Length: 430
Ligand code: AMP
Image (tube, rainbow, N blue to C red; front, side, top):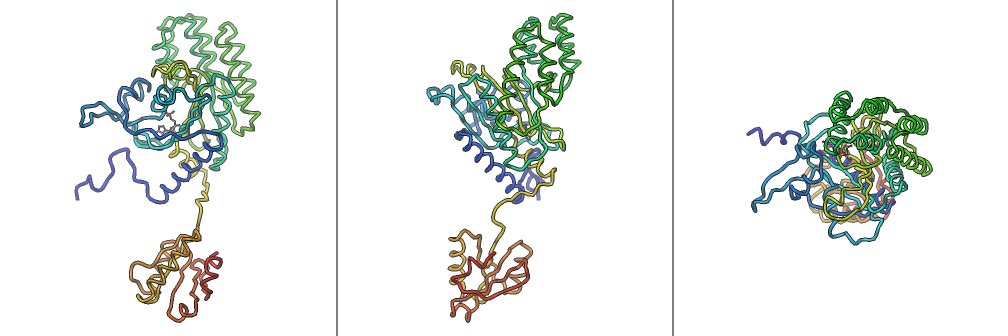
C-alpha cells in the first residue's frame, strides 16, 4: 500500500468518533453562547481571494497561507481566519445593516504552522464580532461572552491575559516611530523577544526617556487589575494618549467585573498580539495546565476601512475549539455528551426482521438511538459483540413473546433481563 494511503498530509488530522464528538460538542456550546448574546451566524467560504486575505492578515499569517491558483487562473487561498471574510461582508453586503451588528462564525481554518502540541494546520475556531461600537461596554461584552463560553463548557481555573495596544503604540507614535516599524516591534513583543523589541525601538529613533518608559512598562504585570492600572498610569503620565488607553482599559475591566465575569484577569503592559490590526484592548485565554492560548481577541477599529467600508469600529474574540478540547482533557473533565443509552434490536430468526425494524423505528421516534442487528449473528453472539461496542440495552424478539405483544429487554450494563410489554418498552429502557 503506498504510504499516501496510510497517513494524512502532515499537520492534518483524522478525528475519530470520540474526538469528533468532543469537537462538535464544544462547537454546539459556541452556538448556544452566540444565540444567548445575540450574535447571528454568517457562513463564508473556505476559499477566498488571496488578495482579500493578504490585505488583512499580518505578515506572519501571510507567510503561512495555503495559496494556489484555481482552474480559472485566480489566486486563491484557504482562510487562515474568519475576520477578513466577515470584514468583507460588513464593508459590502451588510454595510447598511443597523448597528450594533453582532456576527458569529464557526468552522475550519488553515495555517501552514509548524505542527506541535495544540498546533495544527487545519483547526476549528469560533469567531464572535461586534461591529459599530467604540464604547468600552462593547469590549466588556466580548469579555463577558468569552467568560460565559468557558463556564458553559466546564473549563476550570482559566484566566485572561489582558492588555491594551494603545499604551505602547501611542508612546511609539509620539516618539515618531512609523507604523510598519511599530508592527515589527509589536511582533517581537508577541514572541517575548523584549530585548530585540527595545533595540528595534532604539534604532527607530526612540529617545532615551522613551526607552526607559518602555523598559519599565514591559515589566509591569499582575493579577490585581486596579493596582496594575495605577502603576501603568504613573509610568505613562507624560504621554496623554497612552493615558487615555489605560483609562479605557480600566473602564472595560470595571464593566466586565460588574457583569459577573469569573475569569481571573492578569494585566500585562507589555502584552502584544501578533496580528497587526489591533487598536485597543487585547486579551488571550489560558489555563495553568497549558502555556498556549485557548483563544484571543481584542479591538480593531480600522480594519473595515482596509476593505473600503468606511470607519466601523469592531471588537471580537476567537476561541480555538481544538485547544479548548485539549484543555478540558488536561483538566480531566468528563463531557456530558448527551444520550448514553443505545439499543440493539435482535430478532431470533429472519422471519422476525420486519418486526425488529418496527420496534427500532418506534424507539427512534421516542428519541432513543436504536439499531437492528445487521450482521446476521445468533442472539448470543450479537449480545457479546454489542457489549464490546458499548450498547446499553438489547431488545430480543422471539416468536412467542411477539405473539403476546411482549419483548425481552436485556440491560447489558446491569447484566439482567426482563420480559416487558411492547407498550411499556421505552419507559423500561433506563
Ligand atoms: P488567532 O486567530 O491567531 O488570534 O488565534 C485564536 C485562537 O485560535 C488561538 O488562541 C488558538 O486557540 C486557535 N489557533 C490558532 N492557531 C492555531 C493552530 N495552528 N492550531 C490550533 N489552534 C489554533
